[in-house]
Amino acid sequence: MNKIAGLFIAISSFMAGQQQMSLLDCEEAFQKNNLQLLAEQYNINIADADILQAKIWELPQLSAQINAYNPEGKKAFDVGHAKGAGITQLIYMGGKKKNEIAFAKSNKELAQLQFSQLLVDLRTQLRAAYFNLYYEKQKLDNTNKQLGYMNDLLDAYRVQSAKGNVSLKDEVRLQSLVIQLNNDKLSINKNILEFEQNLKVLTGISDDIEPQLSDADAKGILAAQPFGDEDELKRKALENNSDYQYFLKLIDNSKLYAQWQKSLNVPDLNVGAGWDQNGGTFKNEVNLMVGIPLPLWKSNQGNVEKANYVIQQNQKNADYQKLTLETKVQAAYKTWKSQYDQLAEIKTTDLTNMELVYDGMLKNFRKGNINLIEFTDFMDSYRQTALQIYDMKNEIMQSAEQLNQLIQTKIFY
Image 1: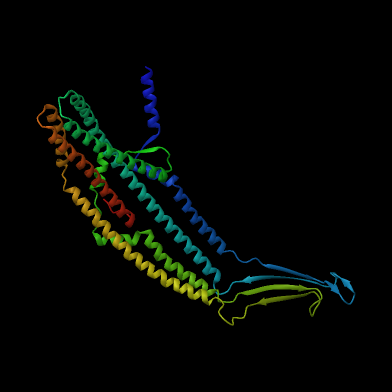
Image 2: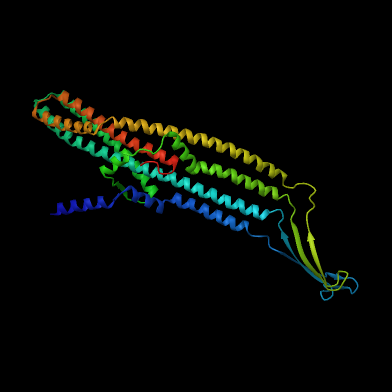
């Protein structure tokens, strides 16, 4: 009874450290918990603060003057007979504030595009890790199934070898196959740990994630094809890719900056009013004050020229980004197409037949209808083929995700 209770506790502890999650569950956790995404969101808030700051005018300046020494009355700080006050306000000319606000709003749009691109990139990493983990788990189950039989068979041959009923050569042949399977398992477990770690960081969930993806759903994802040919996919990418849209928006942003810098060459006005008790022509004199810098030269010309060069630079960068994006879409589509066609050549009946032959080989070997050499040769071939098929399926999903990352709109139907 105690052994059963202990086993139940061990199983419960193992399950408590795991969460079965669908891809949708992982994406929801990702958007809710991902620290990189949450940190990037603040850049939009910072841009909002910059817009608020751009709308604020300089504070008015209040000045006052009092008498320090009256030489006629020989009196210091003769405040009763000589004092004055004034207030001035800087008035922006040439549309400076309007241009500054427009530039700040453009910066917010850039921050939003950066956030969108980060969201796409991290979501792609999430989905890639999820599919990687799913297929590594499939490979692990298949490898464990083979190992279970081969270990039992090896134990039996060791007993018979010790008795002299079978040759040591046959035992070593089986042991070699078991070593290969264990090496496969070691490599698979290493990959699983890596993908589990990636999912934990991306979703913010500390437990190990067990992919909850049915065979039907997996087949549906594999069977999906992109809508449109290569040229259509390029067009959609240029319309929707946030990274490329960022470079286009950067051209507009640099034009707004250049316009703002140009407006800084226009002199501003200082307007104010002043009161003087005895220092003017009249007693208690109230005066209007206006001040403006003399525009003898363009004080911001260097920044204007620099801003114009930035426009040209951003245009070239946008052209480069367009070429790069189109090339990536072309390569990603061709990669997906070749992998899809390669898997399509393997019919469902072929996979079924492979499993039937596998079961048949096990039965016939037990009955002594085939010898050990034939059996181990087949098992080694089956081992490699099974791993390759799982990798082929996974690579199709990874290629599809790369296309989704580049085009950033629904293309698989």
